[in-house]
Image (cartoon, rainbow, N blue to C red; front, side, top):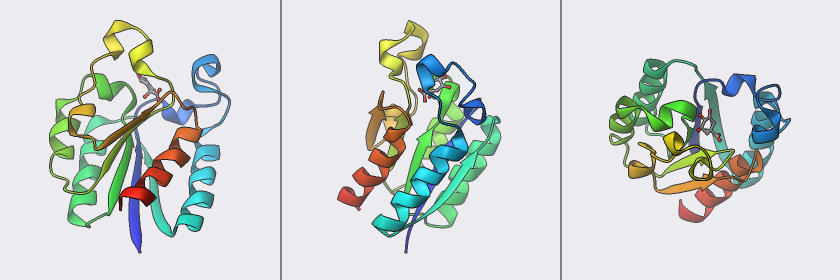
Length: 144
Ligand code: DQA
């Protein structure tokens, strides 16, 4: 079975109510359901998680390494732009890493233009809304 870890960083638990003009109206639960539906069709087993804590995300990336996940999709949210710890943890992984953003940070404020995840990601999917998560799974189907 192809195991895919989908990690979500801070404030993504507030999707649906958080800046819907930027992030849309889907909740993280809606996104998880969409991912589960598509994953079944693609033959993936997914592990979908969210944390507001940087260290927790690092621990989960290390878990993906130890448990030999086939791929990681990560929306590190604001930690994308700040976290060397997440960058370093992702470097552990030999499997494909997809950087995911609902919005396109490069088209937003200058302080969102740097991504520490981008340097270590195999692919980046940005600005596709919640549908980006499904596109990420489809991309993995191509590359795995
Ligand atoms: C985000 C973009 C980040 O800049 C922001 O801090 C987020 C969400 C996105 O999915 O568009 O929290 O990762």
